[in-house]
Image (tube, rainbow, N blue to C red; front, top):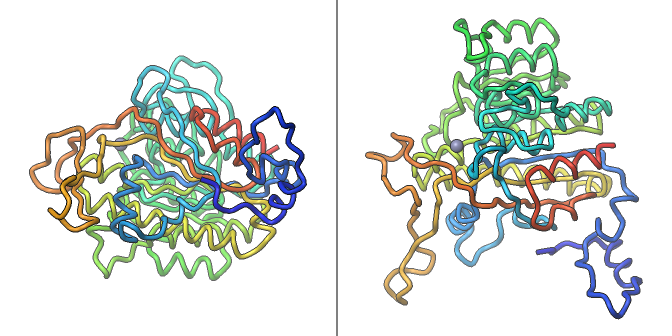
Length: 405
Ligand SMILES: [Zn+2]
């Protein structure tokens, strides 16, 4: 679906002379050459971990009603989907999937942009952005050292090496903004599987990072124009929205997103940031519909913040590549209901997962696994036309690398 063609693109469309023997090329600004006229100054990658298309349907019905408006990310200009298989499995994990995006090739499950057999790997997109002099950031509701952000900011053969990932963030890649859960990995005293432990929180604050641990301190740090920001809001992953009390001091993903973009933009008008809704996957693993809907909805709120920021200026619209995508589907989730008219009100549905064993109580046991179903990509901005089709997850790297140069 391409709902928003810019005025410039429409004008070019009107002037275009199509050879009569060829089918018209689907119209988008980028395909019409606008990508070449407007260099990309920002890349914002937003990851919905473990979100299948049925999750989108469920969240839209619950948030906006069955005939209601689209979710924010559904309004992006280009829509495509990707194969997600990993180097040795039909079904990927988040490590191999994020590594395919970040470093441009297939990896074995559990690997974070590093091959266990020692083969060389590419620099990640975040590292390439740093080579270009851009500011960089990683934001997630998972631990900030978890597989998805780690693939952009670290290289380890085992995703469980979260202390080593923390060390590499602080000592090697040093993203300007790091926000999420995962205080434990920054302060752990027992070695991780890579043999790493240490107090990387102290090391971070001793080397220029401002550390915050709650939403009000995050806001204060942004207001104080902090230029290197480390926010760790919980020991493990952040509290799922569905069980978060009103008194919670943890920021929502949308708040972290606003803080990250404000800070990065202040540092440098050229920046790369990866923002992850990391707990959609968790909700599907435990087959908890209310949690899944709440996490997709919170993720969409964050996309809304980004779209509002981009939409506030023509310059941002022309120079910002926004990509919203999922790494894999989790659980084989489906939206289910009766087909008999009048049995239940329109919009009524239940959630079902292909992994059929229900947990004894919502959220108590991991019973569902990832699936190998292709996953969605929504995108807009220069370069995005290449993502509005059926691609491989490694192609995302090629597209972003091309616009970073
Ligand atoms: Zn998972």
